[in-house]
Image 1 (cartoon, one colour):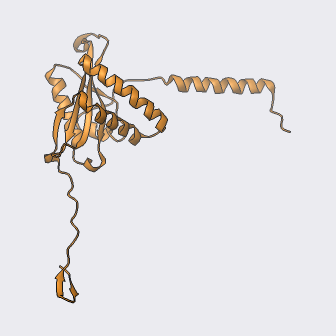
Image 2 (cartoon, helix red, strand yellow):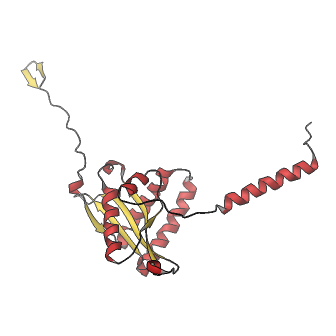
Image 3 (cartoon, helix red, strand yellow):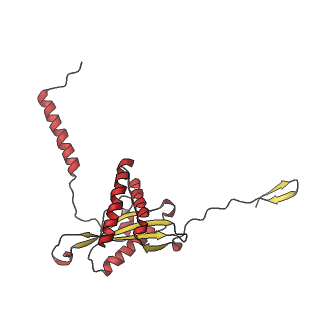
Length: 203
């Protein structure tokens, strides 16, 4: 270790201590309560911010709606939040298992509810510790113990590798973006109208 000399003689220099990185074995999981709603709302907003493409105004409105929805679903018994915390009680990650209403189908999928993973988020300083995997593994065990034949989710590009390692696969679900379809029709209608009028005149 380097020394430096002063009028009183050589002294030992001290190196700055490195901040301790979080350890996954010091993080515990627990079920959330109504008191955890502010954390759940903040984490869901963080998820959307990471995905991108939404303005602050849109996210602000979504926070209000989500907060009301969480309270309603907790009262209905369909909302199972899971929170990962360090030893100091700091939120590290969270996720939600929503027991969503479902339409009946023949065979093992005849139940009127279906488990759905949503609102997965990990605080930046706690990432790469496998917390998302721990949360989802808990949800897998829970849904299997309740006799559900399948667990559903929509994966962002960030979460897809995590879910694939846990055995999730792409399904046969299709969708139609109605807003985009309406916009395309409006543009097509405008182009046809301009074609009937002829080329625009410029001064």
